[in-house]
Every structure is written in C-alpha cells, then in structure tokens.
Image (cartoon, rainbow, N blue to C red; front, side):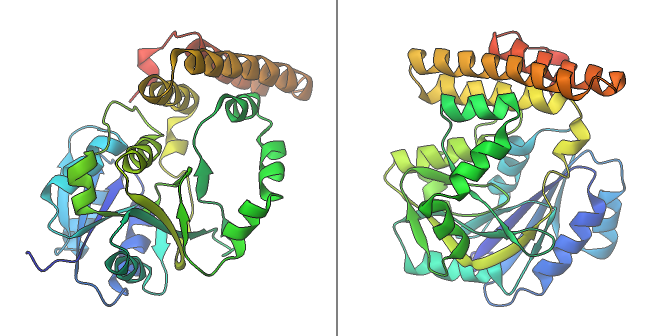
Length: 316
C-alpha cells in the first residue's frame, strides 16, 4: 500500500444520496493512485449497506454513534496510506480530475502544507471558500444575522474578487480554507498533529490551518481544482442545536489561540449580536408567532453560549 498517492476521507451522516454521487465523481478522476476511506457516523439511511454492496473497494469504518467531524476524520487519517490526505465532504462532486490537480500541485510545491480547490454551487457559480480567521467584529455581524451586509463588503474588496476570478494559485498567510475540499501533506500532519477532537462541530479546519501556519508551512488556494459543493447537508439535520454548537466551537477556538482580552471581546460581540438578532426577528415575525418562538430560541442559545452557559443536551 506504500504506492498510494492520495487517501480520500469522507465522513458521512445520513447523506446516502450525496455519498453515491460523490463516489461516482471520484471514480472518474484519473491520474494519481488513491484509496477511499468512508467513515460513517451511525447513519440511519442505509449508507453503510449501500457502500458495502456497491463499493467493495472502499475502506469503511462504521461508528456506532455520531463521533463528530474531527474524530471521524482522524479515524480515517490513522489508517490512511497516502502521501497526501484529502478531506472531502460527502455533499460534493469532483470535477475534471480535481484531486489529481491538487496532488500534482503539492508535488511541485514542497513548502505547502495544506491546499484547497475552488468550490462551486450546484449551478456552477462561484462559492467562496477562503475565509478570514475569527475576529470579534465579524462575529458581531454573524451573531446579529446581518451577514448579508458583511458579505457585500467583503465581496467588493479587490482581494475577494481576486479569489473569484483568478486562474492561478495563491499563497495565503492570513486566511484559512473551507474544510469541504482540502489536501494535506501527510508529513505536515505528522508535525502539527491531527484535527482537534474537542470541537463539537465547526472550526476544526480553522484550527488546523492556524496550527499549520504557526509551524511555518504555507496554505495554498488552487482554483484549477474544482468541485461542486451543495453545503450544509449534515449540519441542517441538527436544527436549532447548530447555533449552540457553532458558538461553542468558536469560543473554544478563541480560548485556545486568543488572549483573555480578545476572548472577552468576542463574547461581548456575540452577545450584542444575539440581542440585535432578537430585535430584528421580533419586528420581522410579528405575524408568525410560531416562527418568532423558534428564532427566539436560537437567539437565546447564542446568548447563553456567549455568557459561558452551555446546554450539554444540544451537543453531539
């Protein structure tokens, strides 16, 4: 198994129809030798049975419970044989030898520890995948629900337009890459360590990219490697618990890498954002009491986490 170039790891949770299309798209990728490892987090939609019947060559790990994104990926990484590890979301379709393109790029750029390709929406329009590391101002916008304004500001920047239009690879020194489609040098993982399993959900790739930069490796964006990313197919199943998990992970990231002052600023920003979101939802949902109650609970979850109160029942 030492001649494997790429180990592709897919974590699934009740997304059988997407896993099927994802595996089919990978099978058409020619060039690098690869192995596929699917880690199933106790799906109840016959994902495991489908893979066993139709994809006998796929290495399958069957978890008896939902272990989360980080732990499941680490399970796959530990049995991988490839020089490179590709973390691929199940709700994706690989296009035009995208995995091979990433592997070739890594072969010719030995200083790069991790790289990501271009993400496309289902209609093949551009989907942003390069993100800024967390900061309190951005957290305020997200918690308040005013993300549209933030995205308009960011998309009008020359840097954001460059990501959307460039055909050349870019080296990143202050940003991280969406975890839907990443290739990681195995030697890099041996140096920086695996994904941090303490994150309940979200920010695992943020944490990993930050540690990779700290160790002196380079992060790269390779737009010639394209995939379709449907997005959020697993997290949508969490319902309102998604908000609690998101902000628990956010503050875990701040606690790990930020100063105590920065942590306080982030918590204050998110709390204020939750209050603003509550007012905006109240005036926008006066005619729909059921919707108002649902959104109010989401605001309450965000505020509770910002104050350091965590409802363990909302976690995975």
